[in-house]
Image (cartoon, rainbow, N blue to C red; front, side):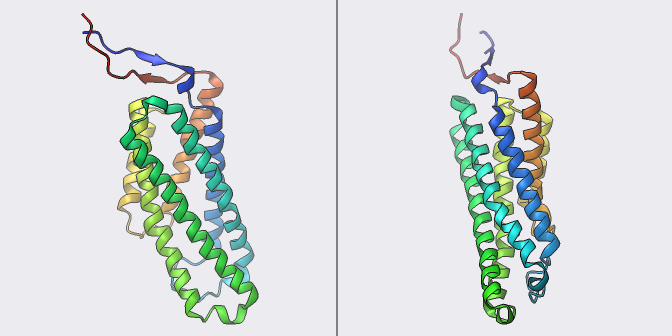
Amino acid sequence: MKQPPLLTRSRLTTPRAAAVAGILFSVLLITSLVLLRMSVPADPLDAGAWLSGNWNTVRLAINLLPFSGIAFLWFIGVVRDRLGEYEDRFFATVFLGSGLLFLALLFVSAAMGGGIILVYGDRPTTLEASDAYAFARAVMYEIMNTYAVKMAGVFMITTCTLSLRTRIIPRWMAFLGLVSALFLVLNLGFVEWAIVVLPLWVLLISVYILIENYRGKPEAVPAGPQKEQE
């Protein structure tokens, strides 16, 4: 029985577009998260005193999130396209679903933050003491630190599993992603900066893909099952 050969095809080489999209997503999301963490207290039950001095910074951070989301969608789409028929249907479904859920949760949280800023601009003296502010602030905290973090972890797990099968990134990078993903999934909200793990990991693999693309090295992907030959 002959061993299945390694097929090398130019279409399996993740294109420059995926690397550029991943870098844009990472830089924009990290910038937005840093601005938010510097301006908004970690305590979800804060009184809202930060609004009077930092609401412009928060508005800038929230306005950056849609652009990072567009880049993330581009990154997902291009990676799936390059995997082609080598993409496992089960993992591909979880990969796409977790990525879209993460993005949806990110947008919902950003929209609630934008709503707070919008209402504060109209009624700055009454918002801080209202129940609506307390509710919106608590929901934003739960979405980002519980649900979005978990979806980011699932996205990383499926991406790393597909990468181990198709070898589009080095094995050590995939295993590093698996360890980081487990940290996100098992995190119970005690680490405030946990969400930044995803953009940092995407940045790492995007830089690697971009470097390999410029070097002109095609990716080797294991062939599918072949019939036994005598």
